[in-house]
Length: 127
Image (tube, rainbow, N blue to C red):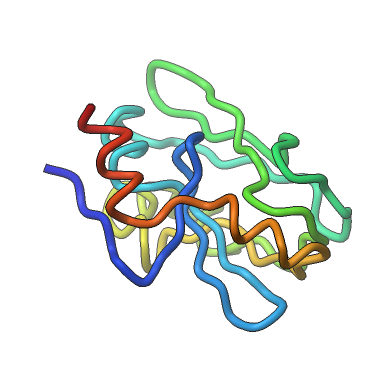
């Protein structure tokens, strides 16, 4: 059973977003990490870049597959979670906490209206 924290927003691509003023913390959902399996590497080489909504900002590599990571909102990537270099499995263990991936400076706050609520995301993944 996946976990859907109410305080977060979600994308159809299985990223979560924690909004805090004009910054946002982004990661992949509990559902996504469960579907991917054991995560072995996260690659984000876009720190300092401004990436558009829906564009790829990096990849997550699991034992069986590599998946693109999509920007939930347009913005500049301020920071990558350095802890994931040594412990990519944090995404599996704590996807909404220590397993966060990036922090962004939001360039178009109106895009928040396109994000899904926890209930809507749950409906999406549970059909």
